[in-house]
Length: 264
Length: 369
Image (cartoon, rainbow over all chains, first blue to last red; front, side, top):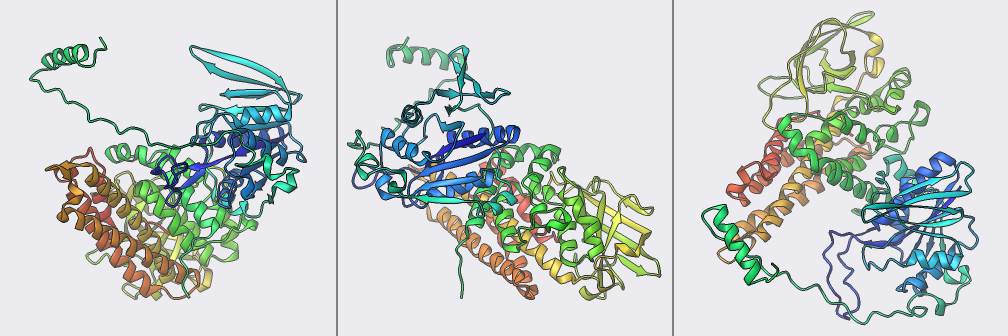
């Protein structure tokens, strides 16, 4: 099976996020960039399927040169090839513009299955996978925690957890799956894997190579614009309840919840 | 003339090892310390990272991705930042694999290296240190007599990691007592050979999860084929230097862990209306530690770089060992001090790093890469 995994590079959740002077983006100088954790589930699942059924795993990333690092991480984990759309005109796009770029980059690549993270942990937009499936006219299976390929490799059966239950879906291949936490535990790249990664093919593409014009991608091709970013409000200091005994503290707490917080 | 840019591989190694250390070592470090345990499943997890086959040539079953003391230093700094005891334990097979790669005869490489390329952790270790007043690794009193067909080993070793489960022990012994580094041989000894006695597990101040044992050798007969390097023997100082670079990289990891923790704590802990980090008495300790961590790392990297160029790194490795051992004590002590009374209780990891950090001064030959 040929499996594609779309990868977004995002700031490490440990990085301290500061808004830049323009007020519409973040300061990127001290940011450590990593593969979106949900995309990592996609890479892992693709590798597990490949190990069972054979085939090839190709990873795709859009963005500046630094994105190569995350693509190499996926190659080090075991992916076979990488496509990097390295074109300033493709950067900064909304979900639809980005999906167009991804759709363009797979137009000459055979695939049976595509994985996207259910969302990226930076903008939490959760739409690229859906938009890509629409552009490619293939079934979308979103927020998935289990994937089973049929023996004849023609269908995929998946599970989506919902409040108190699990939905089971089946779709013909090719299809697009967006990954949810719980799907798997991504492997660590092995040392030989890391060393081998640099010998694996990584092709850089421009928008022109994908048959796209600048007004279909990036900022120009976006219907959504960011008007401004504000940091979350600072957390107010908590209140420590003083009292001799637990009972006394409990009484004060109930009183405060009723009279001050007005929630009981 | 000098370049400190990590290449793509090194960056990936650093990132991946940091992640591994954070997710696999840190969460279990405290329990392992309290319970003196080195979990078997952890050994397998680290083994899966492929640190042995990565450096072993293809004809012996490895991937032949090149061996580098610098890459090893980058790797073990991160693992020791996670937990030094667990790192030393999990990487102990290298104690035998690396000397064989360095000095083994073709026959020895063919016989032993494939064992380090299997899917399961292959327990192997080395015995260097002796419990004598100097703890001087070049002045060994364990002796090896070369006879016609066999070698005969006599002496006592201590601090042998995983001696209880290692199938093979690489024993360093001198052809004549006190004859210095030039007279040191390495002998591959099957632990079940008559005359080999593994003593009771040692109880130490730090590195508690790491099973360390005294091992004695009484008239132990070993076939001549197990003399590492055959007639040529080994260059002991090269192995000691490789080990010192590796251990010092671990010391950097432990020091960095303590310094990072102390900085974070000092910024969050308020006293007299401001974070304690803004008090000079505290800030100086944090700053001094950060300077020393950076300095230690530079020394380790230079030693490793020398070793990778096959230069004589004895002086660099010696200086680095002394400096790192010394500064690790200082930095991990400051870590405890910055936390005040909280530093002394086991709720915080600084006391653990302090106990482990103290050990680098004593230890030799416990890691190699």
